[in-house]
Each structure stands twice: as C-alpha cells, then as structure tokens.
Length: 293
Image 1 (cartoon, one colour):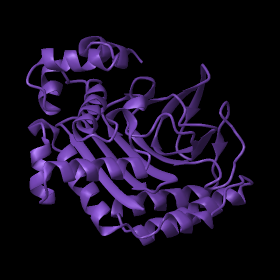
Image 2 (cartoon, rainbow, N blue to C red; image 1 turned 180 degrees about the horizontal axis):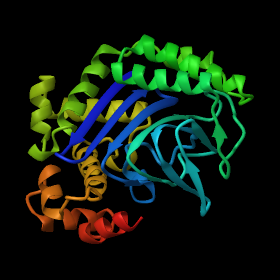
Image 3 (tube, rainbow, N blue to C red; image 1 turned 90 degrees about the vertical axis):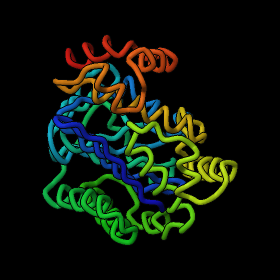
C-alpha cells in the first residue's frame, strides 16, 4: 500500500487529498475549504480508472454533503455513510471532510447496495472512521492498516457485511521505489503553478525521462489510477489541473484568470481550451454553475 498526499490552497480556499493506495483498495480523504466539488464534472478526472468496477463507501466526517444519487437528493451530514454498488455516487460536495473507501468486488466483502439510502453511524463507528482519517494524514502504513481494520469492524458491528480481516492483506508495507515515485509525483502535482514537466521528475527521481515515464505508468496501472491521464505524466498532470481548477473556480473570490495561473496555464484562453478539450464547460460558465449549485 502506498501513501499519497496532495494539497492546493489559495488565500480563501483549499483542497487536500490524502490517499492509501493498494491494487484492490483505495482509501481517500478529501478535505475542502471554501470551495465546492461537483463530481458529475470531476469524477472521471479524479485519477481512478473509471472502467474498473468498484464498490464504494462514503463517510462524512465534517460539513454537509448533498449527494445526488440516481437523480434523488440524499443529504449527508457528519456521521452519515453511503454505499454505492459500483463507484462513488454522483455528488456535489460542499466545504468539509469526506472519507471514501473504494474496493474491487470481493476485496473487502460485499455490502448491500444502499445507493438510494444512507446509514447513520453509531458513536464507535464515527470515532473509528475519524481515526482512520487521522491515520491517513499521518501516512504511516501500519497505522492506516490498523485504523482501517477498526473502521471496518465498527461497520460490521452495525450489520454491514464487510471483512475487516481483508484490510491486513491489502495494507502491506509499500515498495520503497514505488513510494518514492508516488511521493515525487505528489510533490510535483502540489505545485501546479510551475507547470511541472517531465524533466522536473527526472531531476527528483534521478533517472532518464523514459525510465520516469515507465515508473509513472507502472504505478498508476498497478494501483488502478490510470483515469483520464492514462498513466502518462503529462496526462496525469493535466487531469489534475482540470480537477483543481474546476473546484477552485467555485471559491467566492476566484476568477478564471487567477485559477488559470494557480494551475499553471499561461492565460484564460489556455485554460478554456483545456476545459473544452476535456468536454467540460468553459471556465466562466462552470464557475457560474458551481455557485448556483
């Protein structure tokens, strides 16, 4: 299991993404401050292989998350959880903190689908998931593994059929080379304003561009993180740019010009072109839609 940390911040807004990544399980903590994420626009750009069947559990730790599932509004507040049979539900996230666990069918058991309903966690389960979020931010694999087992055990105590013992199998110590590659990728992607290039990774990883490209692809392929970037450095970087830009545009003081500079585009025209090439609305139109939502 690899640990991964990225963050993006302006004076008034912030995004933090903490992840523990294994070939069959992904634990993700997403914290938003002063911004909104509309997953109907960004889910396919979040860095997960959208073609890979997944089970999903979403737990709200802080703030309100109005989820839209099968065209039905499901309000999620702290202490509420939601299962989806294949992938994280389409949702509009407001400022707050959400913990997600995604897994391949069978990897952690087969919980019932509650896609049109949600579950209220008991105090023990909420405490366990809060501890998992804290362990995820700490980045120590053994602590993440133990916290994941505790959280799943707490869920099982509520009658949800997940297998806490399976967490031990997926949360193994990371391969040192893979972890170094992931750390360098995260460091580069946390500073998008500098438009990080492949040569920047060559310098930090101390190997040739061809070797860096192979490392990036291998890590993303093995851990089902291909997503829109297809495991190529430029694709991974540009997909991240689009996700971060689409979220930051919802900040009250954001403008297309300030956001384009923050994610490393030289002009609003370049940002507009990138959005249109990805099938997204123009930055100004997206900004208005996010604020209306």
